[in-house]
Image 1 (tube, rainbow, N blue to C red):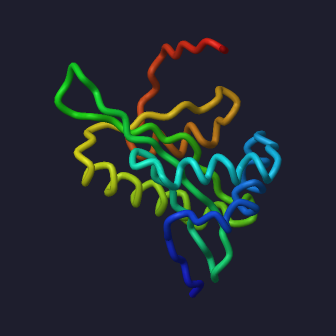
Image 2 (cartoon, helix red, strand yellow):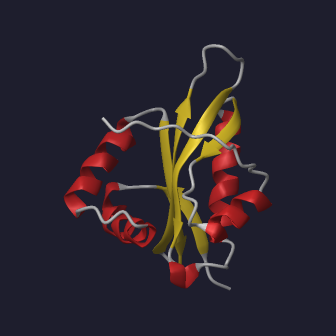
Length: 143
């Protein structure tokens, strides 16, 4: 049985994260990812973990805690969840998602949200399997 470990992201994970983001269609330069990681690692509302199979980074999840003024519970936004295509279907995404859910509940969040492009049908099936429901409107504005 392969050793699977979930641990907090470290700056040294930037190259592996770059590769995973490229698979999702975000081909950023390594330096850009390192800068973002430096910001996120000191932000108390940000959380990110990698899942390692036999000490190799095989996936990661990144989320952000968002307080809500008008309601009691806060929410967490999953910004990215990516698994190496060669390691998919091993339950790694499920492990990361459950890990993140436990964390956000500890932080007194009562909801998780995410944006998933219309073209990612397998991801839609994955998220639906774990209780996420489609929210029909999403607005954005490029600045």
